[in-house]
Image (cartoon, rainbow, N blue to C red):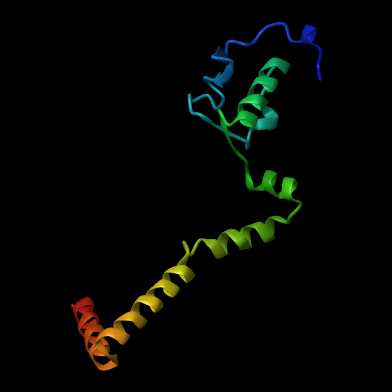
Length: 129
């Protein structure tokens, strides 16, 4: 813990309201999200760094970390992170296919396989037009 004597004033970039600190220009654009990409290069005073850290800790500000920072924090390689992101970019395609299979099975159970195949053929023809 730092003694209070070292923190003289809160900088103009930080407003104190109702006991919470809120950044007015954390990214320079007035956004409530703080980008981690240039975090190490910011020329913040100690008071500003403490205020922004408290904002993130209390959920007042969202911290968007770069992939490199995430790799460092979670001790994973950039390649492994990219591979996982790439695998997830199917936007849940596996779940959609599983749901479609379940729904199609219900249709087959209700109207029969031949009728279902006729309906799928009809839909296919419509899509090709």
